[in-house]
Length: 107
Image (cartoon, rainbow, N blue to C red; front, side, top):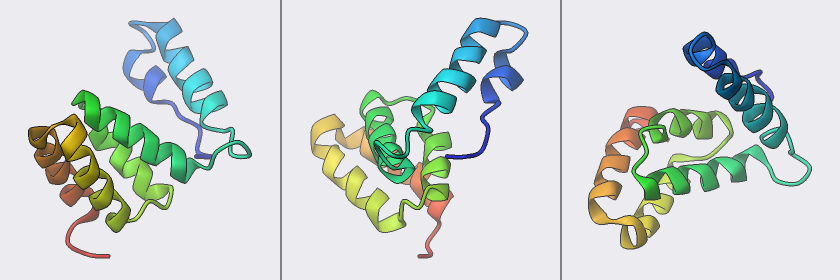
């Protein structure tokens, strides 16, 4: 994830500037940039798994990031299928709806 993240500042910069700074500079700047310790591909898989388990709406955005980070449709399908048994069947159905929007029927 080499692209500079600005979503925090774009969306919350005026309202919650410190949170926006932490989001953009620490989470996406410092943590996600530690590619020598863990690839962006693997970080995306882990992040999507956590967001799916929580039922967090940020899963949609992170599925897009995952695709950019080289996570394949097959990997996402396997991740969701596996987590259905741990996180819940309804969450898996919702995640598949999002994944279909990102990955479509191709690949």
